[in-house]
Each structure stands twice: as structure tokens, then as C-alpha cells.
Length: 109
Length: 239
Image (cartoon, rainbow over all chains, first blue to last red; front, side, top):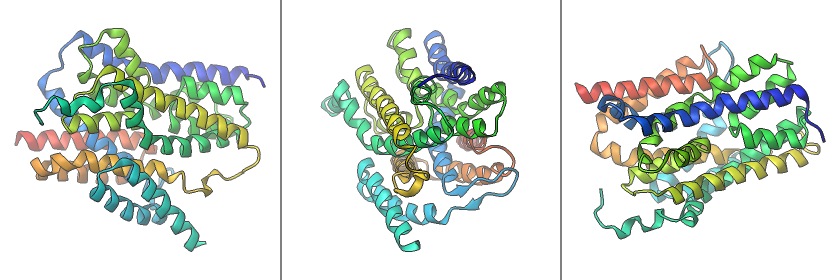
């Protein structure tokens, strides 16, 4: 059990470069009022960032090449999506997704 | 907006926050265990894995650190990559910060320090539904997520020496399923009110993400596609 010096530096540096972007907007918001145009823009952030995070996971990423569709993830997304729309319940959606992918991996193998 | 005060009761206490976090815990366990296993395989000690989870606290960044360590990247390059990968937090914090300005600065910094994709998604879903959320609720949500992540990566770090491939359980899909759920909950109401703008914003995100993924890293593609999607939404609002 030990801490490598270079790993220590990575953790320390990594802490600052993730912590500062996380807290800086909260300091801004406390010190000033956001202009209405920024608030309009920010209204779209939750939807767009979730769409992006979700869509990204339906692909395999290759550096400097077009991404390939991850078929297993995409097919399992269909029942998961339907459960989400039907139940509007996050827990049921997560369970549906895990069951769907487990089933899919079972029959593909 | 709903008008009854009682309606907000469920989003006030720390315990309510813990309860709101529960659906995401499965996702944290799946990805956290995987991150711990990958860390162990990258020859990180349990203490290093734990410190990383406590101080960097970002799934994608922790995977990427392990990848970069394997190829002996210089420390400065690793830190810069962590910065880029987590830059989307700036955008999420910017959007979340509007709802807590009536609390003092230290409490705001506390909320920002523990904000993740998931806790942000859960928070904005409640905001979207017209629920007012309290500091205690947000802390319950954030701290449950933080501890789940820490313990999951530690479990992964312990079992990492026995299992080589962490992706065989289906649990890794919990994260994607959660994004699907959060997306559906988030899209529901706006899609009814402003179908054209919302559809175009989502299409812009998907299309630009696909193109950007062949040009830049996946994380930067997420950030840029989000900015483009928001830009499209605002543009359509104004025309």
C-alpha cells in the first residue's frame, strides 16, 4: 500500500482542474446576475447534455475515424426507452436496461 | 408549474435527497466497480484508487487516467486531459448554480464540488417538474452519490486482481439506462410545449456529436455538441 509520487501529482493536479470548473459558476452566480440571454441558453443545457451523453454511448469511439454503432447498446436502448416513457420512473428504467443488455449478451454469445 | 405547497414536501430533507439518489446508485456501482477494476489492472494501489475517487470524482476521467498511465503519458498531459474531459462540469454547474443563489457561498461551493452528470440530471429533472429543491435535499443526493462512487471503486480495486474483464455483468449498462431515463424525464415537458425547438436542438446534438466524434475526443464532442444544440434552441426561440 503506497502512493507513487507521479500518481500523487496527477491526483493533486486532477483535483484542481476538475474542482475549479465545478465551483466557479456557483461563485459567479453568487456575485452577479446572469444576463437573460445566458439563462435562455442554459435552459437548453440539461436536455442537450443528456442527449449527448446518451447518444455518445450508442457508439464505439475510434480516434480520427467515424464512430461505429454499438449495436448491443443501441438495441437494448429500445426497451429501456419504452420503459422510461411508460413508467417515468428512473429506477424501473435502470433495471429494464440492465435486464435488456444481460439478456442480449446471453443470446448473442 | 403546480401551485400546491405540499407538492414540494418530498424534495426538502436530506433523506429525501438520499431517496432521489437511489436510482442512480446502481449506475455508480456498475461503473465504479469497473473503474476500480481498471485501476487495479493499471497497477494503482487501493489508496491511489480511493484518493482518485475522493479528489477527482469523475468516472470518465478516472478511466482515461488509467489508459494514459498504461502508455506512460507525461503527468502534464494526463492533467490537461482530465481538465478537458471534465470541462462539461463547468456548463452543468453554470446551469445548476441558478437554483441555489439564496444560500451562502460556502454551501454553494459544497454543492458545486460534488456535482456529477447524474446528480445534475436528477436535480434538473426535479426543477423541470416544477419542484423546488432545498440545500439539504441536494446534499443528500450529492453525498449519497459521492459515497456510492467511492465504495464502488474500492470494491472494484479489491476484486480487480481476480477478474480481468469488468464489462461482463450488464451493470455497466446501468449508466446508459440512467441517461435514457433522465433524458426522457427531461424531454417530456419541453417536447409538449415547444416541439419544434426541442426536436431541432436534439437533432443538432446527435448530428454534430456523430461528426465531432471523428474529429475530437468523445468528451470534447459531448461538450461541443451540447453547446451547438443549445445554440440551435436559442436561435429558434428568437426567430
